[in-house]
Length: 222
Image (cartoon, rainbow, N blue to C red; front, side, top):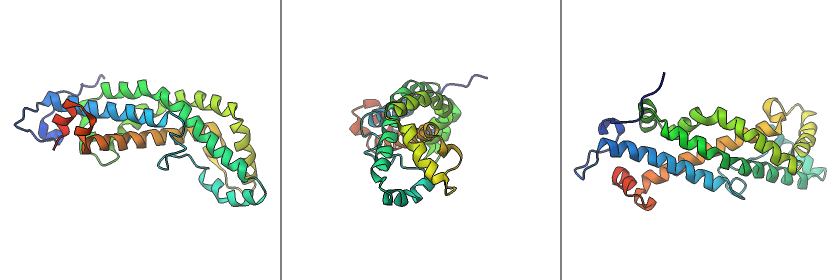
């Protein structure tokens, strides 16, 4: 069944003040969409470039949890440089994949329903992240995977990961999807993307004037 578009929500329900300055329900709805779309585009721009992941401690892709536990042991055997190369290559693969997300993220905003809008506005700090993940994670994973695979092949990342994972596997420390480098990087790339979208949307709400958008200033201004 087709969902209703995000239109004419009461301002009180939107969690926005009905100012005498002339804020309408249409303005409020458009402002929410604009904030989400701008946040998504900003996140793609920030992450889909060199050091977008590698240089950002919030989303930098590290070795899988249990594999980090044996990193010291591997470094002691003279393989520290290989581990560093592995982490760099993992993040480069994520940076190469992220630009492909923009069309689907924008479409998710345009297709937003009344229910989606209410969940975002009444939800917690991760409501924006949950919205985008729920709408786009599966199709984006399908889009990211071949891009990540191509990127990993260029730097022999799969071979590097498998070599390290094989050693860790001897300790019984690598299990499940972590044993597949393409799936691991794809999942962490999506996690990082959704987190940064949420962070960017928060910035817009906190400083709508700084966006330079008259609409966002009108809707989210103090």
